[in-house]
Image (cartoon, rainbow, N blue to C red; front, side, top):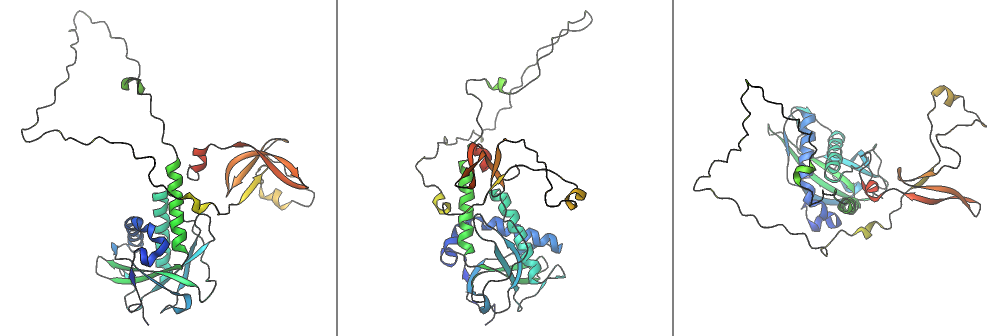
Length: 332
């Protein structure tokens, strides 16, 4: 069996299953992939029609080579693999490519696209080896053609579960973004002229006898429209119904998050770190009795007080970060 005779199917709800909900994002993702490869090859390329296949890891017509790894919201780190169809070429812009390099460019493009679309990337990392030779895989066939009609075909491979996990990842981020309230508008009763900060007008200078009195500026009327032009009549915008379908956030209620309690931080020069021995004391940036920070997946979401529960340390939450700040992208 070859990649050319492989059982490829169009990318749709049947072939992608639970991952079909990401298909509306495919035009932007395809554009990002083409842009990444074009920049690396110094040659404009296009990405053709996406088709989908399934097989076990060891049943691929040619070996799947590990590339980048990534981590979706609330899931284990997954791997990405690649292979080139040997019946096609391996050059774009006169530059020869191997599957690992092309798959790295694809993963970089996916990371950039999701960062732009959803405000959160894929958390790329080093390559990981496959856990089992009979693991079911999801295969994406990406035909790539250069402006000089050079053609190659990349087989981009992932664990079969990634389609559903990626769909839940997208739905969750879209749902979180939709729950962030929009910025408050200025009161309607306040005149528009007062909403904009403007410097106070300077007092008019007294005219000297040899100066002509200033004439008031006249606002010029707009020129009349031609006879065949008329103002456009647009329908009035109405609010969307509040009882419409929403995102099913229940899909994430069973996701485990890492909770950490931080009592303080400090900065030490290397000489002091190397001098640490049992019994050394490190002074932190918090006072005794001050509240500790509670981190969820590395982000501070609350503060609390340290307590002891049945001979175990615990923390009692006293303050919680505002909802809008919790839902904002990292570092913003």
